Length: 78
Image (cartoon, rainbow, N blue to C red; front, side):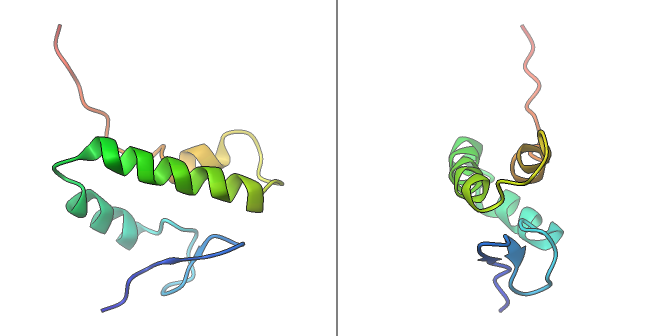
């Protein structure tokens, strides 16, 4: 099965060539970490930190949006 893993230092998907995490990998990550979304955030945060070093020319919040901006936010009632 294709894994849709990142190819560094460009941080593109090794399977489909899209920016990583690609749409397929995002869906798989949400499924894999459905019970522990906090750990998914930690994992993607570490990927973001590494990508920031490799993609230092990225503008503004582009990398943050790409790596963690797509995560669903939990709505809590107070």
